[in-house]
Length: 229
Image (cartoon, rainbow, N blue to C red; front, side):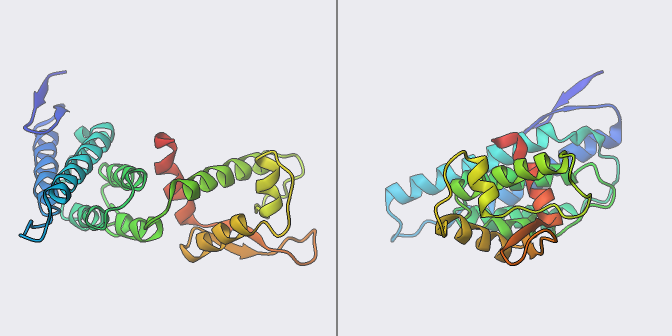
């Protein structure tokens, strides 16, 4: 298969349409990320300017890397306007100074939308709101919760419906003793609910307690996050 190297990405060229699509998306990303640079005025110190420039470079590299892995050569639909809202969702997170691990998740979500003929234009922006200022500790909790969900779904006694976690599940998974009221874990779980990643439901085998179920947004974000752990 022949290849063509654009100004920004090496892109496989199975068809003329795919080549044009790759150039369009690369240009869109480049133009969009240039908007993320904050104008430097007299009040911005040299150190701050250097930091902001590094942030823009990092954001560009993260997004380009995700797109490069995202089968950009499969694009054939000439209508790419659906990409623009997702680009801006990513740029908003860049401007806020979002954590790098969250930018990687958003970039993977964006790349995952590229091959789809009817991509969701609001996916990245919604995810950005859910991930805003999410620390690495919170992300580690999401990984742990996801692992617990997977283990429970494969258990022989799983009824096929009630797939939930509680604070005791998390403490057990982390292999330490439960110390009531596990305030830090429960605060993080409450935050996940407010972000729309989990919701509170019942446990038919128990009376009282807080039991957390995953939402569709949880699945989307975990799918994008798996490759960055």
